[in-house]
Image (cartoon, rainbow, N blue to C red; front, side, top):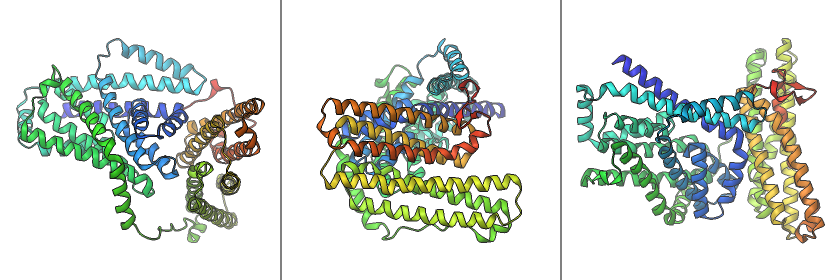
Amino acid sequence: MLAFLLHLAGAIALLLWAVKLIRHGVERGFTNQLRSGLRRAGKSPLSAALGGAIAAFCLQSSTAVALLATSFAASGALAATAGVALLLGADVGSALVVQALVLPAGMLIPVFLLTGVTLYQRSGERRYKEAGRILIGLALIFVSLGMIRTATSPLAGSALVEMIVSYLSRDMVSAFLIGGLMAFAMHSSVAAILTFVAFVAEGMLPVTVAAALVLGANTGGTLIPLFLTSGAPAASRNIVIGNGLLRGGGALLTLFVLIQFSPDLSLLGSTGARQLINLHLAFNAAVAVVGLPLAAPLTAAIQRFRTSSSPAHPVVQASALDPAALSHPERALACAAREVLRMGETAHQMLVPAMDLMRSWKSGSAATIRELEDEVDRMHFETKLYIAKLQQQPLTPDQSRRAMDLAGFANNLEEAGDQISTALLEIAQKLNEKALRFSDDGWRDLTDFHDRVVTNAQLALNVMITHDQGAALQLVEEKDHIRQAEQDMQARHLDRLRSGNTASIETSNLHQETLRALKTINTSFSLTAYPIAEETGALLSSRLAQKSTVAAG
């Protein structure tokens, strides 16, 4: 039994790691495209559902899509109804992932591994490198599923297994709860359901018990984004709550049908494994079909309820700068690092909704951004004073360098906040006062550029937390890509001017000012990566060394 548990745990661990590997590959290589695609898809509930399905299939995770959607909702760029529709589509996309991953792999495993490792090791282009990471992850998923089948095959017919299955057959609610707990513990409903499918394929579980487990995993999957967004604004939480009510409620209703009416699941496929994965897809498709018309009234009800029950004043976070820690340099540096990170998070919070004001001016949102800028200025001033007092203490050379790095980070983040609250808000206000609009092509360029800057700002925050050298190098590399992207957009803008595009002519100066401001904001966030990237030896005079020497990590 110990050997079985060890082999099964190892196989599941490999499965979880492989799913995460794919998701990281997509996020690191193609996040900008995903953000832009999801933002455009959010124009209507139907297109949002389709966009969510595609994004979840690429990311191998509806949770990752939910986190992207919550950032759009927080900025006002995604309406609550479209957000719920997007997550319903993501649930369908996640079910399609399971369909794809249970297909016979055969010779695909060595092909994926060979191609993936070659791309990852040899390619100097980040996207190709991340594509290699994705292929490696796919191969390892198939390997892990084979390991699960190998580990479980000797237990078919075991007296202990039969006793457990017999109990769960009589208590489907317990099976439902176990499925939910497994999905939540794994932080992946895809991994949990693939595990259940492998159990059924080896004869360890009857389809009816596995069906209850799958329904529980669907419910557990809705709890993951709820947990991860526990501190998010109400606009973000509303869409994950709406999706949770629809998907979780649908799972409970389907469980009731299974218990009371014992429907014939053989209609879903010729084998137990096929019946299970088809049930998973059919369930999520049915929830999407029923949930799309209900999304608008449901989100309206959630908003009314949460508005009436929410506190009148937000909780103000206390400063991380502890004066008592100044006599202990390491503790003081940690305090300063936490405060600088909070500065970055506040600046990021300002950046996300800024572009939306250029199309739809909201005085309340503008006032919030200005209030956040005051908070950034306060943290910047207090952090500088704190570091200055710290430098009066005897410090090692390494501590002195880190103190100066933190002061530089604070200066850069204050500059980013200033650009957002002055340059971008002033542009938005001019557009509103003069009733001007960017051309459709110009607006698409600007919002795509904004998406890239938001993605890089989030990456910069991650680098500040993890000090991951691979992510730092990626951020430095992206700074060069931003420069090229800005030049390409300026060229397209000039083409529109030459063609006589009226909207482009009227907003030409504002268009170029927006590009410059976004580029400056990106630079301010990206500079946080340089001290970490320099430790790799891959920077030469503030430029990346030849890409063949860069270890992407």
